[in-house]
Length: 200
Ligand SMILES: Nc1nc2c(c(=O)[nH]1)N[C@H]1C(S)=C(S)[C@@H](COP(=O)(O)O)O[C@H]1N2
Ligand SMILES: [Mo]
Image 1 (tube, rainbow, N blue to C red):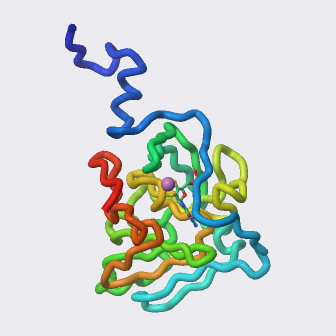
Image 2 (image 1 turned 45 degrees about the horizontal axis):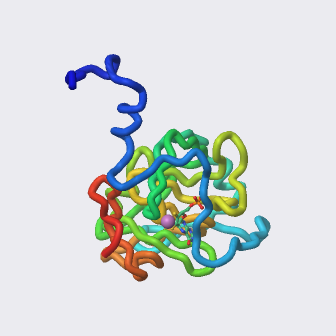
Image 3 (image 1 turned 30 degrees about the horizontal axis):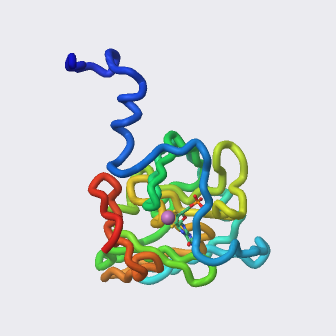
Protein backbone atom coordinates (compact mmCIF):
# COMPACT_ATOMS: atom_id res chain seq x y z
CA UNK A 1 0.00 0.00 0.00
CA UNK A 2 1.28 3.45 -0.89
CA UNK A 3 2.53 5.50 2.00
CA UNK A 4 0.76 8.82 2.21
CA UNK A 5 2.74 11.52 3.89
CA UNK A 6 0.76 14.72 4.02
CA UNK A 7 -2.57 15.45 5.65
CA UNK A 8 -3.92 16.63 2.32
CA UNK A 9 -3.34 13.26 0.67
CA UNK A 10 -5.13 11.19 3.26
CA UNK A 11 -8.75 10.13 3.32
CA UNK A 12 -10.82 11.81 6.03
CA UNK A 13 -11.35 8.47 7.75
CA UNK A 14 -7.63 8.05 8.38
CA UNK A 15 -7.35 11.49 9.90
CA UNK A 16 -10.23 10.79 12.27
CA UNK A 17 -8.68 7.43 13.20
CA UNK A 18 -5.58 9.21 14.44
CA UNK A 19 -7.75 11.09 16.86
CA UNK A 20 -9.23 7.95 18.35
CA UNK A 21 -7.28 6.39 21.22
CA UNK A 22 -6.72 2.61 21.27
CA UNK A 23 -9.80 0.55 22.07
CA UNK A 24 -12.25 3.39 21.46
CA UNK A 25 -15.16 3.62 19.01
CA UNK A 26 -16.58 6.91 17.74
CA UNK A 27 -20.18 7.70 18.61
CA UNK A 28 -22.40 10.42 17.21
CA UNK A 29 -24.74 10.14 20.18
CA UNK A 30 -23.97 11.68 23.54
CA UNK A 31 -24.29 8.90 26.11
CA UNK A 32 -25.17 9.79 29.68
CA UNK A 33 -23.15 8.06 32.38
CA UNK A 34 -22.89 8.64 36.08
CA UNK A 35 -23.27 7.06 39.48
CA UNK A 36 -26.53 7.78 41.28
CA UNK A 37 -29.26 10.10 40.12
CA UNK A 38 -29.30 13.53 38.52
CA UNK A 39 -29.34 16.06 41.40
CA UNK A 40 -32.05 18.68 41.57
CA UNK A 41 -30.39 22.03 42.05
CA UNK A 42 -31.63 25.38 43.28
CA UNK A 43 -29.47 28.14 41.80
CA UNK A 44 -30.46 30.51 44.62
CA UNK A 45 -28.54 28.43 47.16
CA UNK A 46 -25.96 27.06 44.71
CA UNK A 47 -22.36 28.13 45.18
CA UNK A 48 -18.88 27.24 43.99
CA UNK A 49 -16.19 27.12 46.66
CA UNK A 50 -12.45 27.24 46.25
CA UNK A 51 -10.50 26.28 49.36
CA UNK A 52 -7.59 24.31 50.77
CA UNK A 53 -4.07 25.53 49.97
CA UNK A 54 -5.10 28.99 48.82
CA UNK A 55 -4.32 32.35 50.38
CA UNK A 56 -7.99 33.24 50.59
CA UNK A 57 -10.92 30.85 50.11
CA UNK A 58 -13.37 31.92 47.42
CA UNK A 59 -17.13 31.52 47.22
CA UNK A 60 -18.78 32.24 43.88
CA UNK A 61 -22.48 32.40 43.09
CA UNK A 62 -23.77 31.25 39.72
CA UNK A 63 -23.97 34.90 38.61
CA UNK A 64 -20.31 35.32 39.59
CA UNK A 65 -19.47 32.38 37.32
CA UNK A 66 -21.51 33.83 34.45
CA UNK A 67 -19.80 37.20 34.91
CA UNK A 68 -16.35 35.71 34.25
CA UNK A 69 -15.10 35.74 30.65
CA UNK A 70 -16.86 33.07 28.60
CA UNK A 71 -14.62 30.97 26.40
CA UNK A 72 -15.09 28.08 24.00
CA UNK A 73 -13.29 24.75 23.86
CA UNK A 74 -13.73 22.30 21.00
CA UNK A 75 -12.33 18.90 21.91
CA UNK A 76 -12.57 15.16 21.45
CA UNK A 77 -13.78 13.31 24.53
CA UNK A 78 -13.10 9.69 25.47
CA UNK A 79 -15.11 7.58 27.90
CA UNK A 80 -13.50 4.60 29.58
CA UNK A 81 -16.50 2.47 28.56
CA UNK A 82 -15.21 2.72 24.98
CA UNK A 83 -16.89 5.61 23.21
CA UNK A 84 -15.21 8.70 21.87
CA UNK A 85 -16.98 11.77 20.57
CA UNK A 86 -15.14 14.12 18.24
CA UNK A 87 -15.35 17.91 18.11
CA UNK A 88 -17.57 18.41 21.13
CA UNK A 89 -18.12 22.11 21.71
CA UNK A 90 -18.26 23.62 25.19
CA UNK A 91 -18.47 27.13 26.58
CA UNK A 92 -17.80 28.36 30.06
CA UNK A 93 -14.99 29.59 32.27
CA UNK A 94 -11.52 28.26 31.72
CA UNK A 95 -9.71 26.92 34.77
CA UNK A 96 -6.88 29.26 33.77
CA UNK A 97 -9.24 32.20 34.03
CA UNK A 98 -10.61 31.15 37.41
CA UNK A 99 -7.17 30.48 38.86
CA UNK A 100 -6.17 34.07 38.12
CA UNK A 101 -8.56 35.06 40.90
CA UNK A 102 -6.95 32.64 43.37
CA UNK A 103 -3.64 32.89 45.20
CA UNK A 104 -2.65 29.25 45.15
CA UNK A 105 -0.05 28.43 47.81
CA UNK A 106 3.22 26.96 46.53
CA UNK A 107 2.65 23.66 48.38
CA UNK A 108 -0.44 22.90 46.27
CA UNK A 109 0.19 20.06 43.80
CA UNK A 110 -3.26 18.49 43.33
CA UNK A 111 -6.83 19.63 42.98
CA UNK A 112 -9.83 17.71 44.25
CA UNK A 113 -12.91 18.48 42.20
CA UNK A 114 -16.01 18.44 44.43
CA UNK A 115 -19.42 17.76 42.99
CA UNK A 116 -22.98 17.20 44.22
CA UNK A 117 -23.78 14.19 46.38
CA UNK A 118 -20.19 13.76 47.53
CA UNK A 119 -18.79 12.86 44.10
CA UNK A 120 -15.13 13.75 43.74
CA UNK A 121 -12.29 13.28 41.34
CA UNK A 122 -8.77 14.68 41.43
CA UNK A 123 -6.12 15.92 39.07
CA UNK A 124 -2.53 17.07 39.41
CA UNK A 125 -2.45 20.86 39.36
CA UNK A 126 -0.30 20.86 36.22
CA UNK A 127 -2.93 18.74 34.43
CA UNK A 128 -5.96 20.83 35.39
CA UNK A 129 -4.01 24.04 34.80
CA UNK A 130 -4.12 23.74 31.02
CA UNK A 131 -5.61 25.79 28.24
CA UNK A 132 -8.31 23.25 27.32
CA UNK A 133 -9.75 22.73 30.81
CA UNK A 134 -13.15 24.34 31.18
CA UNK A 135 -15.88 24.80 33.75
CA UNK A 136 -18.67 24.49 31.23
CA UNK A 137 -22.28 25.65 31.32
CA UNK A 138 -23.00 25.47 27.60
CA UNK A 139 -22.77 22.42 25.34
CA UNK A 140 -23.22 22.69 21.58
CA UNK A 141 -24.62 26.21 21.83
CA UNK A 142 -27.30 25.46 24.42
CA UNK A 143 -27.33 25.36 28.23
CA UNK A 144 -26.09 22.07 29.64
CA UNK A 145 -28.91 19.64 30.24
CA UNK A 146 -29.31 18.34 33.82
CA UNK A 147 -28.10 14.87 32.88
CA UNK A 148 -24.91 16.27 31.33
CA UNK A 149 -24.06 18.35 34.39
CA UNK A 150 -26.14 21.53 34.55
CA UNK A 151 -25.51 24.04 36.03
CA UNK A 152 -21.74 23.52 35.81
CA UNK A 153 -19.41 20.71 34.87
CA UNK A 154 -15.71 20.27 34.43
CA UNK A 155 -14.33 19.31 31.00
CA UNK A 156 -10.82 17.81 30.91
CA UNK A 157 -10.58 16.47 27.35
CA UNK A 158 -7.17 14.82 27.63
CA UNK A 159 -8.27 12.40 30.37
CA UNK A 160 -10.94 9.71 30.30
CA UNK A 161 -14.25 11.44 30.74
CA UNK A 162 -14.90 10.32 34.32
CA UNK A 163 -12.42 13.05 35.37
CA UNK A 164 -14.86 15.55 33.86
CA UNK A 165 -17.09 15.86 36.91
CA UNK A 166 -20.68 16.90 36.38
CA UNK A 167 -22.57 19.14 38.84
CA UNK A 168 -19.36 20.63 40.25
CA UNK A 169 -19.50 22.67 43.44
CA UNK A 170 -15.89 23.45 44.21
CA UNK A 171 -12.18 22.84 44.12
CA UNK A 172 -9.82 21.94 46.94
CA UNK A 173 -6.14 22.65 46.42
CA UNK A 174 -4.00 20.00 48.14
CA UNK A 175 -0.38 19.05 48.72
CA UNK A 176 -1.06 15.32 48.28
CA UNK A 177 -3.48 13.52 46.04
CA UNK A 178 -6.76 12.04 47.25
CA UNK A 179 -8.46 9.35 45.16
CA UNK A 180 -11.88 10.25 43.81
CA UNK A 181 -15.07 8.21 43.51
CA UNK A 182 -14.28 6.22 40.35
CA UNK A 183 -10.60 6.03 41.23
CA UNK A 184 -11.48 4.31 44.53
CA UNK A 185 -13.68 1.96 42.52
CA UNK A 186 -10.94 0.57 40.31
CA UNK A 187 -10.34 3.23 37.68
CA UNK A 188 -6.80 4.37 36.93
CA UNK A 189 -5.91 7.62 38.64
CA UNK A 190 -3.85 8.87 35.69
CA UNK A 191 -6.60 8.14 33.14
CA UNK A 192 -4.68 8.90 29.94
CA UNK A 193 -6.75 7.47 27.03
CA UNK A 194 -3.71 7.40 24.72
CA UNK A 195 -1.95 5.02 27.15
CA UNK A 196 -5.20 3.12 27.81
CA UNK A 197 -4.94 3.83 31.51
CA UNK A 198 -8.41 2.49 32.20
CA UNK A 199 -8.20 0.47 35.38
CA UNK A 200 -5.89 0.49 38.37
N1 LIG B 1 -20.82 14.15 39.47
C1 LIG B 1 -20.49 13.15 38.65
N2 LIG B 1 -19.80 13.45 37.53
C2 LIG B 1 -19.46 12.48 36.68
C3 LIG B 1 -19.77 11.12 36.94
C4 LIG B 1 -20.48 10.83 38.13
O1 LIG B 1 -20.79 9.68 38.45
N3 LIG B 1 -20.84 11.88 38.96
N4 LIG B 1 -19.40 10.14 36.05
C5 LIG B 1 -18.34 10.45 35.11
C6 LIG B 1 -18.29 9.50 34.02
S1 LIG B 1 -17.88 7.92 34.41
C7 LIG B 1 -18.48 9.87 32.71
S2 LIG B 1 -18.17 8.81 31.43
C8 LIG B 1 -18.95 11.22 32.37
C9 LIG B 1 -20.15 11.14 31.46
O2 LIG B 1 -20.57 12.41 31.10
P1 LIG B 1 -21.86 12.54 30.21
O3 LIG B 1 -22.98 11.87 30.95
O4 LIG B 1 -22.09 14.01 30.02
O5 LIG B 1 -21.57 11.84 28.91
O6 LIG B 1 -19.30 11.97 33.52
C10 LIG B 1 -18.38 11.87 34.57
N5 LIG B 1 -18.75 12.81 35.56
MO1 LIG C 1 -17.38 6.88 32.36
